[in-house]
Image 1 (spheres, rainbow, N blue to C red):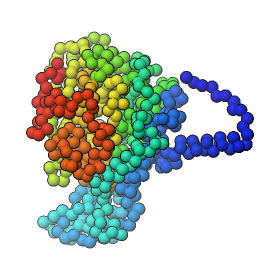
Image 2: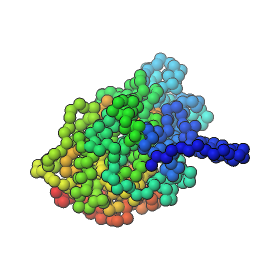
Image 3: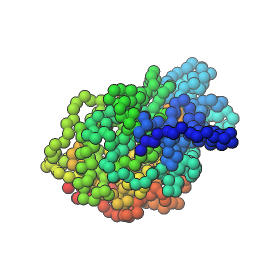
Image 4: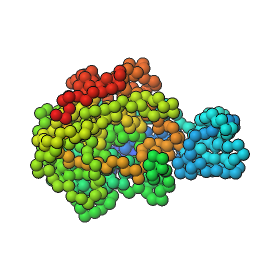
Length: 572
């Protein structure tokens, strides 16, 4: 309900002064994020007055302030920060080489060591020099010398004030700083992440069939199209609200070309497009943004700590809608997607303790092709029934194991009238009743994690009592590949100046998922090293309706032999 402002009564000088001091205190709290933030970070911004703003409702968790704290904690690890500190090269390590080339400059060669050192200091991702016998000095992307039978000489970058101390951040130090910053922010009463306000909720979901669309956008040029399609193709857009967590590059940007052997990171001469600015300025978008149906948390590229943490931030943009739809920022929508999904989930046997998910068909929101509403039963979409155990890459080739989901081919050509039981949850598309947020809130302690997100979601949802279904018709599509877009793991290399750090981070943080699922090598807390990886695991572990062992049996997982048999019930 909108309240009209009343003319304030006349105040005494003392009362006026007290009111002024209170106002200044509130403004200080409200503006704290903006004061801490660099120009690249614009704090949480609702568009229009109808959607509710974090700065207008004190009980809401302050995700912008939390993000700012993490940014400050990790700033010393970033390559830009380290470039401002004195850098030395050497001492020379004979019969060794440094692997990899800086992503933007490549293995540029220089006739003198002095010229090469000067170039390395001003080049992002340069961590040392290598010289072939009688050859030039080449820029390199790593600082750990490798044996060279050809007589090469390497000159690793070192901090001048700490002889022999590597400049590159370690995964353990980076993750430790992240965990400490997040745990500290969540324990801060003024940020409203703890106790009864742990998720900034104002009560249970409303019973009005409204939908919150949680969008994670990492340097995604199709994000504006996704937001536009979500509202344009909804039957009831007044019941839809979109919340975007955007990571965007505004200066000194890079982009990607090619793939696999031809992959290259090259300079980008322009800033990334904002996800909602052009939409909110357009005739079709202005009405939605003015009504508060779009909200965005704007963060820089360097403040991206992986998809799982982005989903955690996005969950705090929920404002009491009945349903929760999670998608990536490169998703397209079918006409009438909203009413179709609501009817679909209500048809499940276990609603409201049900969830609809699969890997959507391929499509792009930038396409001008119409996608007509579903008016009759269609061949059953595929179900997520299978998974494989795969190693996370590392320098040795024997990294820790994680689980990758696999979608079964569409073996069921018959049409279906209702969703079918499925085994797993896809992070890029799931639809469920928003009551799950108070039961299994998103885990903020899985930074830099990519492979492992979906098995964690699947286990936590199912053990919390939510049955998983595949859709009866497809209403969301997904743009796969996107080779033109720079990937999150490539930005980790650019941000922290290390070619190997991302794999090290994955191998470290995956232990939290292994512990959650019950892998034999991480089942007991004392097996997880360092112990900080299990921060607040009691709050973000399995649900309390079903056991982890029951999930393992239900999905036919064998975490000892690292195999899975497709459950016979899945997709039928």
